[in-house]
Length: 351
Ligand SMILES: NC(=O)c1ccc[n+]([C@@H]2O[C@H](COP(=O)([O-])OP(=O)(O)OC[C@H]3O[C@@H](n4cnc5c(N)ncnc54)[C@H](O)[C@@H]3O)[C@@H](O)[C@H]2O)c1
Image (cartoon, rainbow, N blue to C red; front, side, top):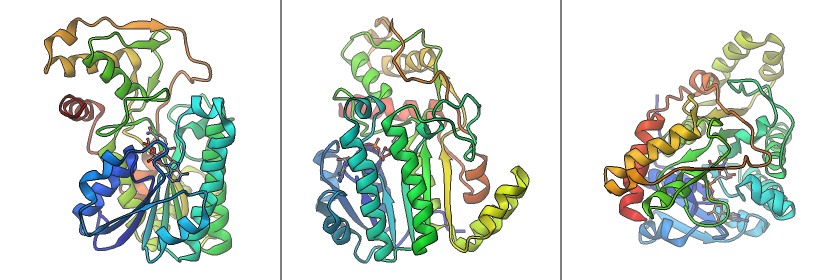
């Protein structure tokens, strides 16, 4: 069965961002026409510079909060891979209104425009933050806790809207709950940079990275290639195939959930997207230092410091990826180690 989107027209919202630009690149390699909708709020022109001269690439500079921009971008598209949002838990705590405006208001506009344009499937970036304060490990899609931030709320509300729009308007939706994604083009700059690019930048400048807390908190760090694979499978796995596997999956985990899903004629699902292994912050930082010191031996001597724990951080996060494996045949190809090697190499030559 086909595992990649080919010969299609695909809208990538947030296509100038970290994940979006990697999706654009992968899609262009498979002879797709790619439309990128972005307002460059956190994304960068340099992320898509290489695609601008490609006749199969169209940039729509616009805002998902503007319905006309959404309509223009989605016109004639087969699939939408919706990545545009304001990421970062701390950003949403500092400015909940803008995060809500973009992540919910913009999401609903894009979803509505996609339903109106009758796209084949609307695949969107959901988040592991939806598990909130749930202590259960590994995280399984149907068991979530209480949200711990405005960001987490926005991402969960998106899931509710997606399901509701599937029921009301018949648009197929798949939410991908990403777990700490990393890789080439992830932004190391700004107040809300993610831990891996932030620490890489520090180490390359021979400055000490500061771990929040004692470093025993752990995450299921996920390399970008695995995320690209999940998006492609989520878009093209046929409805009847998912339905067949869905019945089997829900029967195995909980018969009552299977009733819920078997009544639907269209797909509306969420999946964890991760590698399925957790790494603590001490191990991560050590591994970054080792990888980077292959390029600059001085980095091996940079000291690693510890600061106070950050408010709202959960101690551990680890995904069950069984549902994605079963329904989409998701098979992450990059472990954290192989992903870190690739990412470090990229930063050494591009930062
Ligand atoms: N990186 C992760 O670890 C992670 C984890 C969970 C979920 N996610 C989700 O994945 C998606 C992509 O994240 P990323 O890490 O690539 O972030 P990013 O900031 O690099 O990319 C987001 C893109 O969306 C664009 N954007 C923001 N607001 C917009 C608006 N109003 N209109 C049009 N474009 C807009 C930005 O300019 C940027 O290019 C987001 O939805 C994020 O919430 C990311």
